[in-house]
Amino acid sequence: MFKGREEGTLNQSERQKFCNDIIWAELGEEPEGRILESCFNFLASCTVDLFPSEIEATYYAPSVPKTKESDAIQKRGILYDKYLNNLKFLRLHGMRGSVRSKQPTDEDPDDP
Image 1: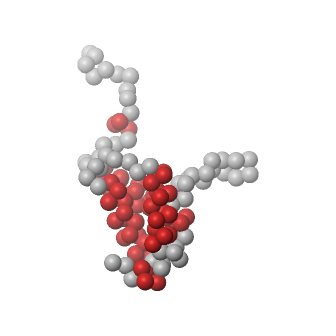
Image 2: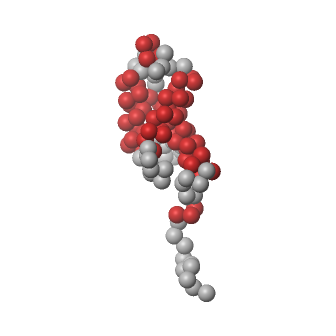
Image 3: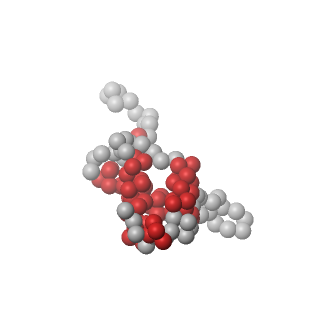
């Protein structure tokens, strides 16, 4: 499937395709599903097991809260980016509701 399998590393386009395939497989038949942080950590770890020359943080790095010495760091990595991009794609094509539409409101739709 990937040339890099024999070499233990992937090129950029192989990384992108590999991560995209993983995210679609995780979402599966449930476009409303979520992928939890623990799953991202597991997937990144498994990727490094498959391709030992790869760096885990390339695939997923969890958020780091703000400290006195440094600013907060947001979640990042190819897996997380592909996840967000695929969610946008699903929303754009009406296959997933918007985040805002799921928030409860104080208004009762039956009230005049």
